[in-house]
Image (cartoon, rainbow, N blue to C red; front, side, top):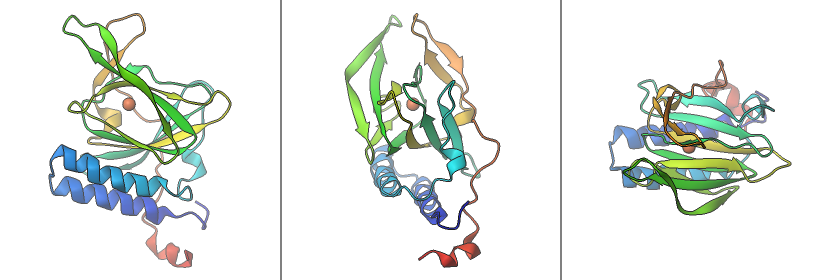
Amino acid sequence: MTPSLRPDRLRAFVGRIASLVDAAVPEAHLLDAGGAALRELIAHDDWLPDAFAQPDPERYQQFLLHADSRQRFSVVSFVWGPGQSTPVHDHTVWGLIGVLRGAEIAQGYHVTPDGALHERGAAQRLNTGDVDAVSPEVGDIHRVSNAFSDRTSISIHVYGANIGAVSRSVYPDGGGRKTFISGYSNDLLPNIWNVSKESAIP
Ligand code: FE
């Protein structure tokens, strides 16, 4: 991590989410206040180490940035190479998505009682600085795509669980539903706790 980076921003964000989770606030309040905290985090692009901003030519990357010690929440950087997108998937827990670089297209879906998948409203474009929410309460099934075919986009997500370990569902293009556990792309996490080294930060 170069000295000019601002790991304090992610540390402060993690602290704010932890306070909301500790207070067991209703989900609507959590999405609102957590969304405001995420908007502040992504208002600056000076804190994400390059190692967690690297696209892969094969598929989008999900780098764990922080996991709560009790797995009550996790923070992930999603890195979308040009034209990459997720399959249609659900989360089963609350989540907030904030675009740090570039732009994304999010299309919501709902499943009818007969198991068919239908688009839920129009696709939303999320530009740098925008925040979106998912949850079983507010709409949990979506597909997210890089809005650009010629550049990387990065979004920062926070979820109400250790999301890489949660058993959830993808909805393949041919129909049906498959269980998946996403895991993470990285083995090492950014060090946001080297506080004594931060005295040089203006
Ligand atoms: Fe998602």
